[in-house]
Image (cartoon, rainbow, N blue to C red):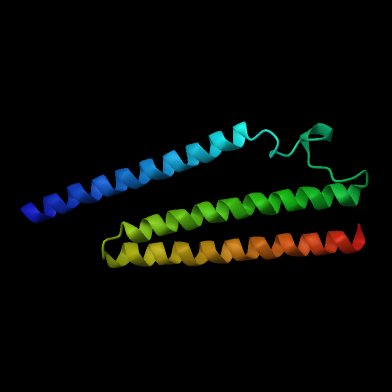
Length: 127
């Protein structure tokens, strides 16, 4: 019984440490993006990412932005699935859930990259 209590305490410390590490990393990335003034894209008309004066160019640029944000959400889901898998500690149900989240998140990221590439190729051909 004493070993189970120790294991639960260690598990809670690992979860807290992982959560704090992720929060620190996200905060560091956010701060570095804010202070990298030249690297940030400048919004143009109405804050939307218009690439030209035509409606097709504007729609294409907006679609590319949406796909990029979807990819970012996919990477966050992949990170969450890895966290679930790592903290499962052999519990079959949690391991299965973590594997499913990682599998679908990888599929999500691959589809986002493919969608971005397709939009970029079509944009170069027609606009």
